[in-house]
Image (spheres, rainbow, N blue to C red):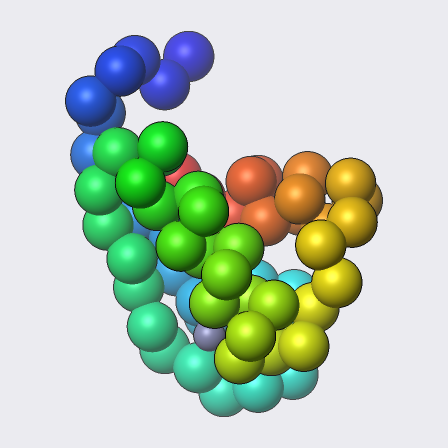
Length: 61
Ligand SMILES: [Zn+2]
């Protein structure tokens, strides 16, 4: 449903994480998603698994 160029936000407070991180990343889905994934892996120690990708994606609105 996310049309191309639509602005979405990844809110780190919604990530499945114990870390109190308040980072938000905004932009189009194609920009936000890889950055959010890189951040989650690097800063939060998440594994880039199909399940986590699905969870991450569901937090980006
Ligand atoms: Zn974070």
